[in-house]
Length: 418
Image (cartoon, rainbow, N blue to C red; front, side):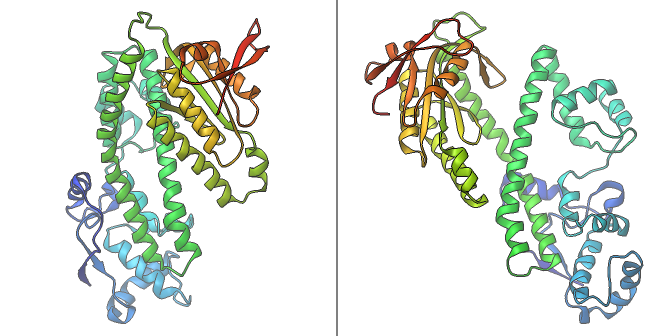
């Protein structure tokens, strides 16, 4: 077996630090899930079966006995290449068997590389952090992690770091606010993780499975490369978070200028939805549906950012955004309605809102949502506060409307030229 240089990969400071952490002794996966070659610049070259007659006879017997290799199979050589590589990484046969039973043998190195290190039980984690096991479970649940089976060794050094940060934050913030923040972070991180996985499935794994044949070893190496890239991508989160924090601080200060009530903040809330989406989605195939949603989301994101707003949420065929100035909200809603691939409509309302966990609540939010439902395709309806604040756009009276949840009819205007 000879060493060959692995093809060049994307590298950066975060990737370099992570790769260096993987270089070490052949401890194997059984005790610490820490292979000796992952992340290094060279990997074993398994060669061809004829190059390894001794290796073939010595290892084939145990792989056949474990049910990992069928010498009579037409793909035996391909499977043997994968097993030789997995063995060179120090992965024990027992783990190969477990992964094979689930149809995930080629994914095994990437799965193990995702959260490396020795695993400990909840009791051991509590001893290391000085926290009560029940409190640890509550923190993890708020962060989006399900309960682990009692006595299972499922926690790593990453969990210790997260809990230490939680204890530090608990010295400054109330438990109620801190747990609310954890829920926001947990749901946001899960969405990021889901998006990363979907991107890999569509652009990498899908073409490998459905396109020209790729060997099991090729799929295994690609899977590991994807995990390595994902781990390196985590280095983006810190600088992006600090940059977004800066934007949030500046925006909050602007919105609260002259406003002493910390329970609310004056903002313009907007909704835009695609009125023909349900019917079109029913006729569209998966690819067309995905293209429609992604085009709308991309357009919404670009317009909101261009006009200094914030995208609060995207729900398939509907977008919710917020701006400090009502005029900016008119530009965003009008631009979206005009540029959308299918019929769209919008609603805007300005007033005091409750901001919590990155979301917005209160009558003004409800009003913006309700009047969006009243708008006809191509129309943007606004409340009186928006109409009176924006002097460079024309509004046409749209009458007084009875709205669910509002005691009195609400006077509305239609944004001209939307």
